Length: 349
Image (cartoon, rainbow, N blue to C red; front, side):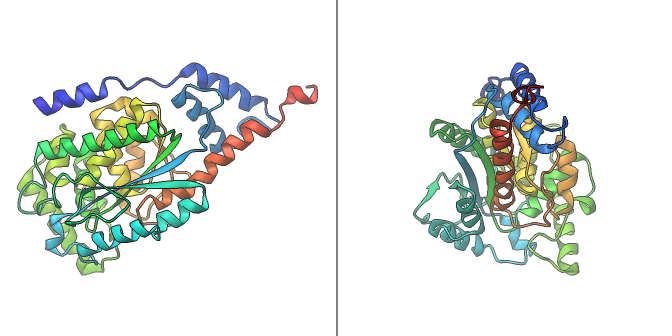
């Protein structure tokens, strides 16, 4: 199909990681004044960054969080503890720089870029990029959330965002999102792509009670029955039971991989999007890092599917990219250790 041909064209340029740079980075780490492997994940981070960037001394000082926003028609089914209007309110909060992701990003020396790919707002707040594909998805419990063309467009927007950040000098990126109700399509997409049950992949999201959780699972099962997404076609899954912000984050992963830009994933929504990207282009997987383990039940399953080890377990479930930002200091620590620790040769050994 035409969409699949476009995706192939967009992703065929993703390079392999630089094995030579990884070997040199590992050799350097092994020469530092410590037992081999004693810095654990900090060593892994540095070695992987070398392979991703092709640099034996990678630099990560310019950090950015890309937050993609979209509304979901399925909120009409009562699957969220908050009304759909909160998406727009939070976008206003993003505009003022007062959201959790902004506060944490400032603390850890990062900036935030917010992109509207599918909110219901007519007027996008100042400071938010307006790349709206449509004003919210349709109710997936009654039919496809969007068309294949719209899903493809959301991916394209994400890829273009990654390319733009790379041109701006960004050296380490993270993905985040905002969209009331989005744990419902995320659970649907995750279940289809992993083959796991609705019960296994569906959590309480923004804080549903037992009755709300039961309703949410019923809605997801109905959506899957109505749409019957094809698990072998990630674009079909995204279009039928996904979200515009998920498509944009998937595109961001693909675009970042094309430009050797490492990406730190946030929670379950971000990771679902990453799985969509990896199913489209498996060669994008080595460019991903997992920041933390969310309390959402699907998250651990998704990380296993992507063969990623979370750096933090902090019991978080906020989204926005907040968990990804919390992992940034570990990347800084890896860079500092690699650059500033003495080697045994410097001690005469």
